[in-house]
Image 1 (spheres, rainbow, N blue to C red):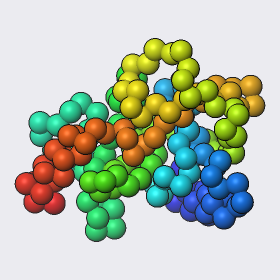
Image 2: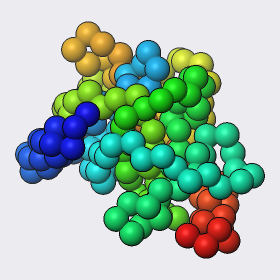
Image 3: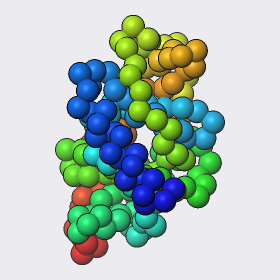
Image 4: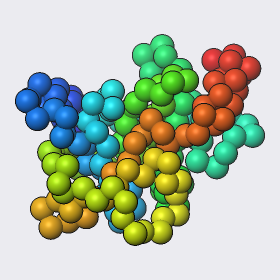
Length: 172
């Protein structure tokens, strides 16, 4: 994805944020064969993939850190978190957590769409490979199932503390 196309997508997202249906706006993205969505207001920005600098002794899904305009941002591979095979990616979603910003590697961003509460099953009878703490339900939207996730909960608090500690020890 070119930088111009990314900027155009970000402008589209900004315009969507200003709409009256902001609370129902979701960013749809793909990880493996599945579509996922997170509330648009939780996504700070969408960026092109930046190769992370690894930090030793972290969990498998934590890939390291990147420098984003002078800010140290942790990187999580959602494919690994969601039990998928890690592959080369071109897109990252940046979001804020209590311990600081995190970037999530996804296969691609698809769109911004409105998902109404009546389209969401919050307690689906599903078995998943990933932590249910950040699985918020499944939407039946336009005859398609989309998994709803809370990106700010992708990492457990212990993970966030370990990441921040590692970043500071590593001198970043």
